[in-house]
Image (tube, rainbow, N blue to C red; front, side, top):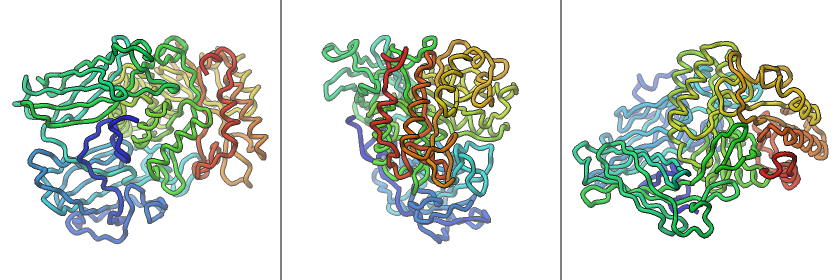
Length: 600
């Protein structure tokens, strides 16, 4: 296990010791008339309920379980602060996720706000706190607005299709930490396989006067306790680039002189950062990284220079009693272990930015991840602005996780409904592609997963055909028609948007399956429901084998991990019970077929 690991620590790649988990019981009030600010609830909180943060009021684990729409809600909690620590530190408050507009007051004074439901945000409240007890008040505003990034949250009073109960307010961990006055605000880590190094970028929080020869960042890399390298970077500016070498002179058991990361060998290096000024250590951060390279070579996706056949499963990350919020860290680990048990080497985290501890355990356990944005459902200038800002927060926040091998900002034309022919919407998707590439030049970016691609590093197709032979023939006999503008997926959408052409990218069937059991018409799956386990296994085997027999397809993503409310097409139910013996599913998934037999 990585050295910096702390159970329940919410930001596992930038770990400090002096932190406080603020989850648990908070005072809570609905404000359906939105009068709380006018009535100054931040000065005198009219508590009427208690809620268990980080669970939203819609969930059972919140202690409230009210699924009705409430657009304005308030929270209150008393927090303790040790003012003696503020001589050399700042007190920083972090929200891992709160949907959608979050406003914060401390001791009656406004601290700031944030827009967006899926990215982490923080407030430096040092100047607002006093020694001892302090009053923290949070207002969250949400709505059924189809222009804001919603993901799978419904925008009607009742569930419909594949959209579920809304998520309102705080839904991820709230925590605080004492951060040194001179500190590292951000660290970007990029493995460089060509010269056996780790490329680093540091962002420093400090006064201009201290920059220079007396201020440096010391970087220490170890592997299983053995020192690999130590690097010192003089901080002459607040933003500096550096390089730390990873190559070891003891190559026994090392590939090319380094330990690489893959699903079979998820090797992780420990790394420590120490910010030193005038010989004194001000900030110490524990982290980890992996040496791995993901890139496109013609029709192949390469991991560490070798073709990668991706056996993915669609993962929406919902739980029965807590919805989008994992009930605990153990639930995250359980999901990853059970996905491995089913024979998958990766997952597509669908329409959600998961708790970062999930990414930690995917890093540790070798689970490939496609990181997909939560979609809006109406195209406007406002939607473009909201999506762009939050997407770039997310890419920066999760950049360092080696498990993430693909960014997927758009899915099935959601929020860009006219992308097939509308240049305005096409320009938007192209802009997000290039903006993502400007931050991360290494990972593939998929633009409009499923169909109507514009500029995209991988062409992905969604097809819920339930007869294996029909599925296989479609892609064997009509490849050129499909990839050059022909129709697929029940003659619904073209693979490429108008004005764009297939240019030899890798092709992945990124949604298929979705098989549901017959249960008196309650809930739904894709295609006809099956009545017996034997019927399920037969159909699963047929369609999965058909996909693997298509020689130019380099991977698949089955729908889905578990049932989600009315959508009952998971390989597990919502309590994470397997519907079929996982050994049977694993054998089918890992069975070697055709061209990809060496890589499956």
